[in-house]
Length: 323
Ligand code: HEM
Ligand SMILES: *[C@@H]1O[C@H](CO)[C@@H](O)[C@H](O)[C@H]1NC(C)=O
Image 1 (cartoon, rainbow, N blue to C red):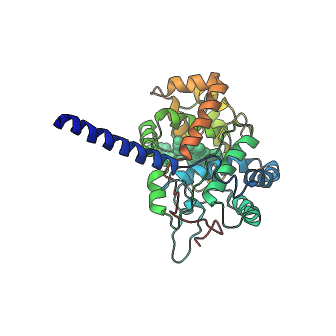
Image 2 (tube, helix red, strand yellow):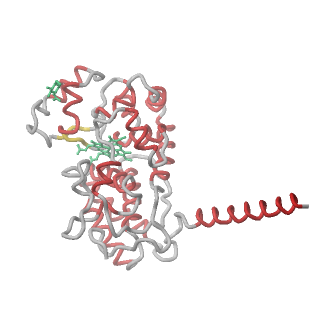
């Protein structure tokens, strides 16, 4: 008898826990979040972005990176978009972001159009998640359905940005652990690094690798040295494509470069350096479809890092300042 009622209370307790878990899952993001409050949202974002990316192809890459740098610092909460003020230290001047992040004006333009159609309704964090997806698609990348309902932070953390965002000098184990800290696997780290199939990097980000790297094709290193002098700060801001083959077109050639030891960043080449990710890099180098599918799934997961939902945070009126 005692054990039977004990079993009953255990069952009740388990059901209660299940309900609580389902509730918390329901409080999470959903693809149709703005269907009634802002039905034209996705078209507004795409229509605002398309001409801008046609004009400046790199912008598609810059927006993808901006979303990554938002999500890795206290979750996808629009914190990366906040400007520094006398009372708030934003993330824009953290080391991985300073003189490097781009795309803020494009986000402002989209936000203005979204506000005109749906005032005080759509968060900057959600606009950034949609812009990252659309930027990827406009450069030939895969599409995915973006879960929505994120709210915006009222604060930012420059210190956390310096701690959580990986520098290009990281080795494989540091990269794996920084992604593990955000609930992402080594495989997801490797597929998300495939973002470097688009966009550019500055000489200061890859100088040490092209002069002192031990796992780099010599001819490739010489080519990159031509526009990246050995002694800083000479040529610090000179750009080179992260994917030497096609920096404005999304594809598995990034992984082909790694197999050929033509990764631009030290951190890129760490994914193919005799370690645990070699097989996966080889697979993606031959299988563009697997890369695209896994990339889309990992982007949804990255976009789900600790969002503010419900009544947490706010819907910012201007993405650069808390209300
Ligand atoms: C795995 C660790 C990663 C490291 C160490 C890293 C590092 C970097 C660095 C140093 C740059 C060049 C910045 C500059 O020189 O101004 C860069 C560019 C870029 N990163 Fe990453 N990144 C990583 C992962 C990611 C992820 C997960 C994404 C997106 C999901 C991403 C997207 C991009 C894009 C698209 C660019 C080009 C941006 C542009 O042209 O404006 N990266 N990354
Ligand atoms: C390469 O390594 C040497 C020896 O450690 C160092 O003096 C030099 O500054 C490094 N060069 C670059 C470009 O990192």
